Image 1 (cartoon, rainbow, N blue to C red):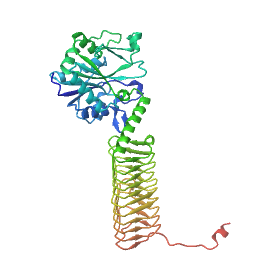
Image 2 (cartoon, rainbow, N blue to C red):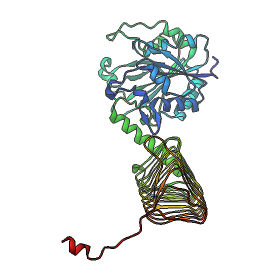
Image 3 (cartoon, rainbow, N blue to C red):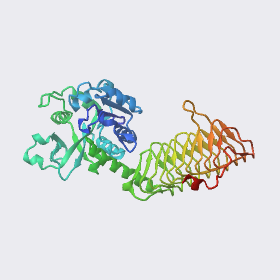
Image 4 (tube, rainbow, N blue to C red):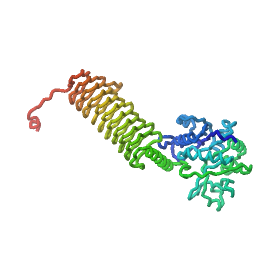
Length: 456
């Protein structure tokens, strides 16, 4: 048999009614990836050349959401696992390699396990190799019944098992590696002659055994890997397992994570050496964090780049580019489109949106900066508001190098504060302030003597 080529058929047509969701089950996210994507990535890393996904319930939604090099086939009626694989026959008509059959709701399955399954299959020259698991309590699962030689003679479901077979604790996980040609031939022999009126893939095993073809089993080293996700509780349990894997991998790469149980890091996040991550941190999407940073506690960063030596405390950053040696927070909100250079400070209760901030500049506290270009070594005083929106359009503000914006200033866009210029505290600036000028826009103070006494 030519088994050097490996193809996978992934079953993702079920409704997943126990999820109690309007979304397809395989599109629920775990550690920043759809459940189905975890299976696709594992198969790809295991050496799969071609992936065929069988969709049914909300299949078009799955096709739109999954951005992965796969082919799709439709199972319009859910008539069993064997029927699902039948839908891929046309795409496998001339296939002669090894074929993995995987479930789209097993996100904890690893590439190493699939690779070892394939290797065992090739070495054993079997028609089928079943991925199994040994459980302390196998109640509810199909049991693996072996011959004295160790090869598999059948898979028996719980409801059909004898008392002796129920004592078997090796179970079928629903993951298989087949000889492609043997499987295609056996599919034509499947019948729906059972209580459910469905085509069972497990019946293929009995067909192989009757023909004298070799069927073997390969127990997974960690039974947790093969667990499927059928409800929200199991979704959370899978999230915890994968999150722990992500954290441990990063820690072995030189990242300090203070408390794995209270840290949430997506699969695609990258973190540099000697960065410390405190509890209550969420790092999501395509986030990349440099070396020697301090992140958290209580910080959320989404799809952002963070340079080296950055300290972020109790803040939310989304789709932003943060330069090296910045300090952010506490309680800062850095919104999409923000870019900062080196040594920038964004302080407590500051919101920045779609703005660039130059090297060494500071927005220390209690300010809003939107649609603004801030130069180098600028100081934005406490309580400063950039008034960028007139109710219909948004306009840009420019604050040039070395400028000093006094506390409680309002910069009404579009406006330019020139190089080394100053705005007086409490001013509402509606006109450009020239270089090195002082802009004052407030009424002269008047004191009325004995006003309080007369008022009484």
